[in-house]
Length: 303
Ligand SMILES: C[S@@+](CC[C@H](N)C(=O)[O-])C[C@H]1O[C@@H](n2cnc3c(N)ncnc32)[C@H](O)[C@@H]1O
Image (cartoon, rainbow, N blue to C red; front, top):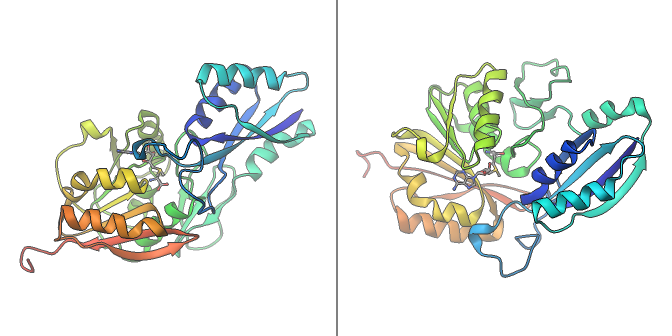
């Protein structure tokens, strides 16, 4: 059995993984290649890329194959079908047959992401503490707690959520923020994502965690305001989404944004101030060059 580790543009990584699995690869695990990087953004493609097309930078795909599998031919075919740039081969190694499950699982272990919250995959025992556990396995959607921006949002929720706050997770990915909010005591929890696979994954993950939460595509989102709106996307889409996100924050409610590099914080704060001076955003916290911005809408009595 062989393991191949390839570096791919994050936008095509899932499709490449799926195509390799379709033609017989035994497993394909994705991890962020740039989780701790604050290099120029975007980290792929040409410098002139339009802001709307920026996505998360690069993924490492670890692919396990049986002996005799023609990995290069399978990769070439996947690249041709996906119409993307060819991933870069980082390394290959021989793997003992009995080790492949262990290798796959070793890539994702329990992690302590905020004072109370742990992310625990299905193959691990929960830590023997009074921790609040989110059960989550890596899959098709973004959000396993390995990225600093996800952890920043979870920490904001852990430290600031009030009992029975109702929460909107905008750009929910796996639903990790919605599930975390519910486990921390939120009331009604709703999530949305433009990616139908993410909406599906979030529903499955909420059910697996025994969390009552509903997830919708943006066009099917029910009307209504929330006491907490959290969105971990990227600076440019967040600026475009300002009216939509601000319109969802109830009087006295909070808006929490991440997916923003430290050097982009001022421009995002300015865009939101221009769209609605009644909800001033401030830097809440920074981790590894990524920031979380947060602010509270004044109540009618204060306005
Ligand atoms: C970085 S992931 C965040 C996932 C998860 N909330 C977390 O914190 O780890 C951003 C998610 O936002 C979604 N997204 C991007 N643009 C969006 C938009 N305009 N409306 C809704 N979701 C969007 C993406 O599909 C992706 O799942």
